[in-house]
Length: 275
Image 1 (tube, rainbow, N blue to C red):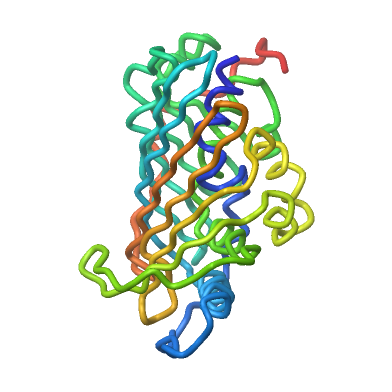
Image 2 (tube, rainbow, N blue to C red):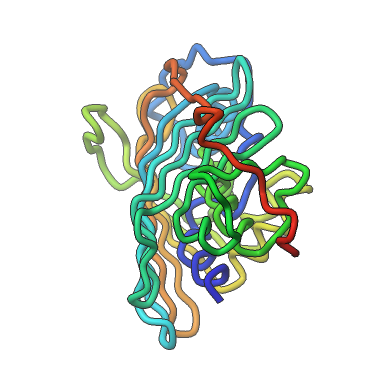
């Protein structure tokens, strides 16, 4: 199924976590002390990312599956938690087993609704306008609709950083520059079960379901002197399937411009679409 394939491709990028888990009151980050143990650095990074109110992330996820072949998901997301929660996600590439999604996809979360723009989805549900408005109360609705809405939940800064704190073998791996920022590179692994337990209770079930196709996950994280991660790479494998995800973070606490589509381009979800 399309939903399952896309879930496999994007699971490592955020474990199907709702974007509202990243919220806070801003941060006056202090430099991380160089003598901290690697595990302490990860703990501090998780604390600091929970205070971030806005950021931009670029992500690429590559997968290989014995039966379904190779696939790739590539996109970027703007996020803000203040003055109100808003997300603008663009998926430029969704290609699974040689089956792509022409035109990609875009989703904007604003207020009490998600606005989705996918040409293939438009044809599937019979929408008459470029954008489909889906109230948050109906996010768990039709399978194909939820597939695209789930993409909003895959690029979560706080969730990814929190999960790596489950590592028992993290170690420093040198100093590198990422996006013009001097960082320290840390490397390690984390068991899926332990990582999921680091998340809020109401997010664990979805995360566990999406990571079920993976075993232990290898990670690399590049942390700046302010304690915030600039890059995260995740690699997982199980029963011949592999997944490699790379996320680049920038623009922490900077103003972002997230707007809903023009009203004349928005249609409602057709009433005849069933779950």
